[in-house]
Image (cartoon, rainbow, N blue to C red; front, side):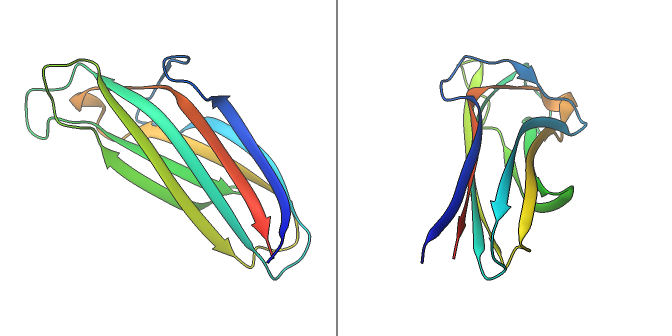
Length: 141
């Protein structure tokens, strides 16, 4: 195995250094390009997003859900949904989402990777991306 290419996009590596309030519509958070030189490969993507919840609803379900989606050239290739931690005495509620996706035999050429985020339950509370927020990709053959 050999590392053929690596790239990343970083909004911030630190917490409490950004403030992107999510709506119910996909919002582009990060984007980068990655060149794949040969067809027999795998592309490993890793993303981390720190987020908070304010104003959680007292009614069930009482927590908003963040959806993170990675697109390759405009096509969804990976996604997760994560519910906020339960309402407690501390506000804002602090959360961290990290996930990895592995794509196999990605066609040779230049590809654009985009990370989108949205709040699936906006009436259940406000989700704000506060950091860290980054995504990286590497091509391995």
